[in-house]
Each structure stands twice: as C-alpha cells, then as structure tokens.
Amino acid sequence: MTDSKYYFKIIDDSRIPLSAGNKDYTGIALATVLVCIIAALLIMYYIWFRNHKKRIVELSVMGIDGGNIDMEGMDNVSIFHPIKTIRFETELENLVVAATAKSI
Image 1 (cartoon, helix red, strand yellow):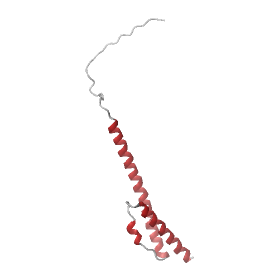
Image 2: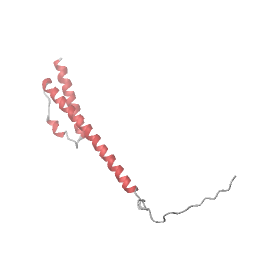
Image 3: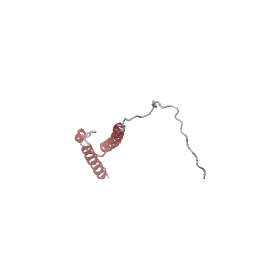
Image 4: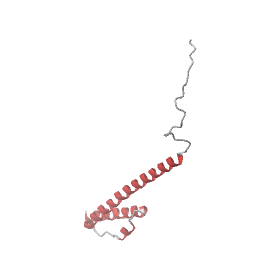
C-alpha cells in the first residue's frame, strides 16, 4: 500500500457570484406550489361545470319535443351553485325521461 498525500491548491478565494447564499426559498416554493394546485383545481372545476351546463342544454332541447319542461330552475344554474346545478340537471333528466316514456 502506498502512502499518498493530497495537496489542495486554492485558486480563487473570492465569493462565487451565482451562489444561493444564506437565503431560504421554502416560502416562495410553497407559495408557488399552492398557487399551481389552486389553479389546477379551478380549471378542473370549470371543465366539470361546463360539461354539466352542456348536458342541461342538451336535455332542454330534448324536452322541447317531449313535453312541458319548466325552465324556472335555470336561474339557479351558475358556476357558484354546483349543488343547484346538479339538482336542476337531475330534475330535467327525469322530466325528459317521463315525457319520452309517455310518448311511447
């Protein structure tokens, strides 16, 4: 076994200009991640609402031929009232099914 010696030579002892320093970036990283998660949730909610709104329009068109469809609940359909939107869609579905069952 040979006894090797290591020699370190310091070339430049000045500060490195691109170093991170002593600053803690966890707050900024956490805020960025939270904003991205909230944005993703809002986009998914908008897509979900748009699909239900499209279904309500389809059911409304189906109901024109099938019988009397009460459109008073359409005022409750909004992006801020998801439960009322689902309830109106279900009622509209039931009315369309009942109207088509009568015509058979």
